[in-house]
Length: 210
Image 1 (cartoon, rainbow, N blue to C red):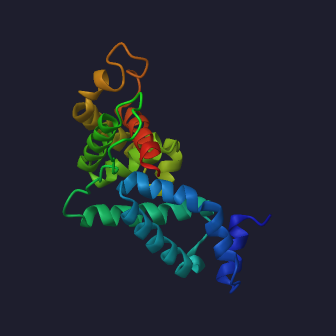
Image 2 (image 1 turned 135 degrees about the vertical axis):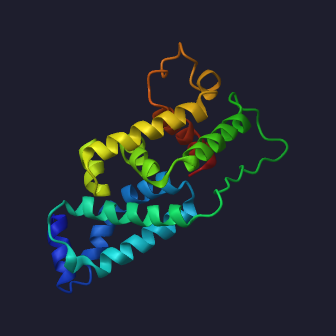
């Protein structure tokens, strides 16, 4: 299997299939990062599309100073940050349609969906830079070093942005600890609020069919 850098070089040299193969390899992770940052499927799709167009056109500018996947993630994150900074209204999250006669579930789906809305609203209140750092480190498991490389900032900057964002999320989502995460005595109480938010959001995405 050809390496990412080789595929990118082939694309820059005119190979019509190389970039498509590169996209197939990484599109799921790129989409996941975009959705985690923007929290809206349509915006995420547009951001990934914009980023891939930029990468397609700018492949000749790749200098190999970072892994190709890091280079692609950086372009996607920048596209997401541009959208966050241009956004004038907070995104809305539609509740799933429910009709009469549906079987009773052991969990309260409406309550869980309400929690997802609260979590996403809290994430939307973070600054764009904090949101990007937390999305990469806490929601997608990148190391601080990897996130710093993707964002093009120092590792200390990533740590600082995560710390400030986690503090803000802890304040905004503190009331969910007892309702959703088990309170101070619960097993998740030591986790950052952003990681707890991921748990709630993941459950909501499962219920919403995403």
